[in-house]
Amino acid sequence: MTTYVIRAKYFGYNDEVFYVTGNRISNVFQDQAEAEAVYQKLEAEGARDFALYEVESLFDADEATLKQLDEFIFSRCGEHIYQDGEVSRDVLPSSLSDADTFSFVQMAEMQKFQLVSFEHEVKFYGLWSTKKQQWLEEHDEFFAGLIYAESPELLKDKIESIFADYDYSDIELAGSLESLSDQPILLKALIQVEYALSYDEDKQILNIGLWQNEALYAVNALLKQPLFEIKQIELAEIQRLEQELAKMHSYDEDYEYDEE
Image (tube, rainbow, N blue to C red; front, top):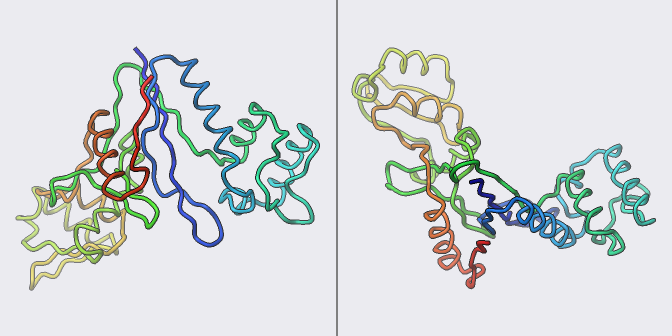
């Protein structure tokens, strides 16, 4: 049986645009048609939450893209969203149909939701902190959320969150290369080619540079005691933790996910 999961994106504001700060599960469905209908409705409704000139994808778009998007809107409802080199300071025209609004959202890459399907069982993967023995979270002044994705590869860009376990500074691991790794020769070779890694022979300290994700990811695989693990996390566990985070950080205190 296929399961469909809708994840809602949450946004912060940086004085210029609204940017994605995190996401959480919004709905769970067993029926594809129902899931797609709800997803499209949510996107159409959410598209008018922000003034267009404050939408990150439009703010970063080049003139050719903005003209193409404007032509689409004008062809559908006779109104412009881009004139004289400026994006409209208003929201999308109310005269634009929900179907056309959904199409525009996809064209402009301004999605507020994500629809993910799983063929047999729901499989999400999270980042596990071996130091704190808990799932890693991402924090922003506007949002706090669990770090997880539908495939392990999508988490590579999120591993910088492990630096929070080390007070946002370089990570220092004490010990000989032999005590740190079952493959000390490979570890030494990696240190020699990776500028963000260094090893003090006298002090026997391995240093991993702050925010150096690629170095952290590479060296972690060689450590006897990894700094993080990418593990499968159950849907029920995600829902429980997201509700706890919502209460803990006082956003959407009445938050409940919808399961159809």
